[in-house]
Length: 273
Image (cartoon, rainbow, N blue to C red; front, top):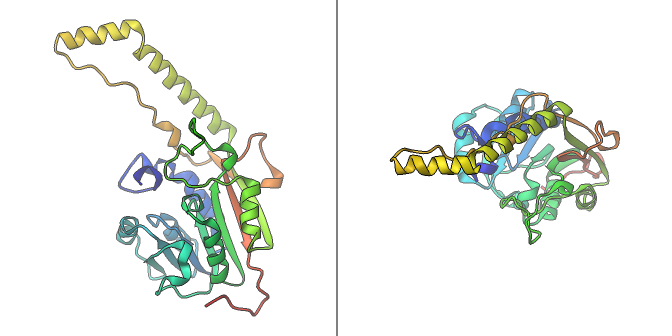
């Protein structure tokens, strides 16, 4: 899952770090001084970020042994611990000691076979008045193939606003939805990059260029490969902003939805553990 997971070992896969870490920065406001569970932590860069942002303790869980091996190699802090487990079965992880004040689940929900199971498990693992912060790509922007299947082969379900709200309302009464929007400057740069790539392709595949490459091959010379577009995954500081969905800063839809949910248990009550 290199293309779907940020890794220090893969430069292109790591190019989207800026807007990923912005979501952790948003979640960090609910983690200061708190006991936090990072459910679906991947390679751990976000879990580490939350400890830097003064979370009291972070327990990070992921199902991938490969991702956790990288996380444990790169991020070592006394208040950070990595565990292997399925976020749909949090209560079955032996070393996981609930309750938690905050549970963070960022860009993981779309990978789950049963998102409702994770939501139920998260609620059970939260302390009274605990917070769940969850993010997922905006399903209204999902790219699909001719058969209607999601083009991203790693995603099982991408939720739009109504679907995400419905999923969370089954376990949480108090929910606020935010969006992460691409800024005008970022959109303009991306459009310019696409236009440049289109021009390069037109030049490369023009009749004259085709004939020239054939001639070079006949002379035993090597031809340049077709142009590749890699900048679409690039994220820079300032490319995105996060705001409440009801106060949309731009006329276009957000690329990512973020929900903040409050555990409905009465104060003084405990979770399922």
